[in-house]
Amino acid sequence: MTPPEHGLFGRVAGAVTGRVVDVVPIEDILDQIDVNALLDRVDVDHLLERVDVNRLLDRVDVDRLLARADVETLVQRAGIPDIVADTTGDLAGRTLDVARRQVVGLDAVVGGIVDRLLRRSGPGPAGPAALVGEP
Image (cartoon, rainbow, N blue to C red):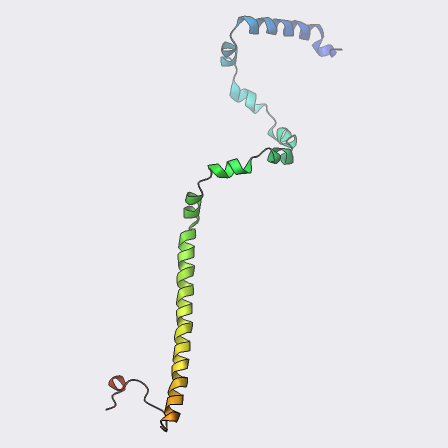
């Protein structure tokens, strides 16, 4: 049964509206509607409460979404090439420093062994003769 506030008046308004829509193009009717005023009446919080987020996410096609993403641009904007270059440079520098220390240590050990084999006594020169100034 129709609620009392919509009784006869509601039925007449519905019948008239149906006839108007049949006679007047819908575009002309929509041109008369103030969309901003209509949107001001919308309770966004109430609409959001009705959204089932899990069901909405189930409808998202992640593969299609990722296919639309420009990964190369995202990588560039994130600065990943610069980060990789800096990290690689730092790593190479540290590796080279470790290798140098190992070579210097190995040189000292080999020098000590050679000194013993040649029966040299005392510490050897601090460097090459041209640099140390020894004849």
